[in-house]
Image 1 (cartoon, rainbow, N blue to C red):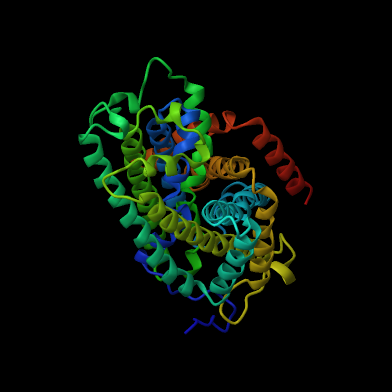
Image 2 (cartoon, rainbow, N blue to C red):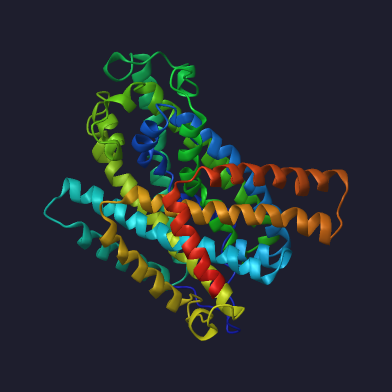
Length: 436
């Protein structure tokens, strides 16, 4: 039975630590590491593992900034709230506005991925039909409350993790037998991290900037602060665990894939479908590509579910503060869901129909919002704790000074290395927000 909201118009506290972690993992879609395998392997000259490791390290520092702020501010607005309370309301709006870009577009990209993949295997059903069905399905699940979304996420994340575990086992056995087409150099292969013949910093940093999108799950967890049973304890813990777990799992999967087929980045006929070419070549278990298609699509649906839930709560918080029109954005239905926000997000999800041939461009646009928002949160930590609260003891200097400053520098480097298209569109979006 759907959970009803409290009579005072507040979110109902129904989520424990396990549900928060599953929500975060569902939002980052564990199988996304497979989706990016082909394009990022080609972009990095076969050093996908290094790209993923660099991204994981960058996001781990940023996750600590989020954890620090979530202990103090237990509101659902995430970066918007943290920056607003630490720097000033105008910068808070900018942070919320740029993060809205990735939150609004990520469900659209998820629907698009499923539509394109399903159309590949069932050409009779157009991409547009898949997108419409999925948008409707996710809307109906989310409209009846976060507890239903959490239950769906738990099942989907479990299935995705099982698929990843199977891939690791099969990959290790395949490598031991010589890898794909006998091209493997063995289980220990340093060129998966660094190949001096083709290595370039730009070829690592550019993909890493895009892959920041893969770690948005820890940010999504912070949007549920008002629905967590014990937000001060569980939200920071879930943020760090989601980021750490994703970093370890993603890097391991990337390494297994690269070592299994070291020359894959040179031989793929279609990098966007590179993972299907890899899985189709595995002989140990037939039809692993079909199994992946099913699990990955389910994972993308989970990501879209969580993405819709997260962005509607950011919009609600901005509406509640009357920064966005309160009558539209700051209202909850009887299930504790900002339903008008959900309708807007669903409509944007339908725009995936227009971008059926430009998936990676969408990912680049999402990365602008993510990295910019991360930058502002990292800056807000030392300002709040060291300057405003004057907490300047040894531990605070390290946690609230050194850690976020390192994270700021890393995010700045990633921001610089984003594509010019992403920067241009992102800055236009930011300019619109400033005018608002």
